[in-house]
Length: 81
Image (cartoon, rainbow, N blue to C red):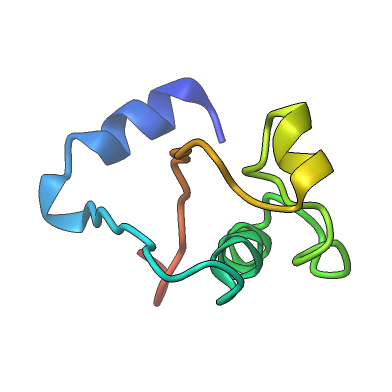
């Protein structure tokens, strides 16, 4: 998607949804996040839950936990909109 298209989408504030994912350790937050990214076409469905896309730091990978929060923008096409 072109930058201009993304800027136009951001102007439609009634279409923007902000979500937060919070849960106890080992309850699937990272797996859920990976699956959202896969649903948006930002990673393959085969890697969802394995790639740990939002765990950026080496210590997160080494410890197998998410330490820092992360944010990502996704675009979902629902009903042709």
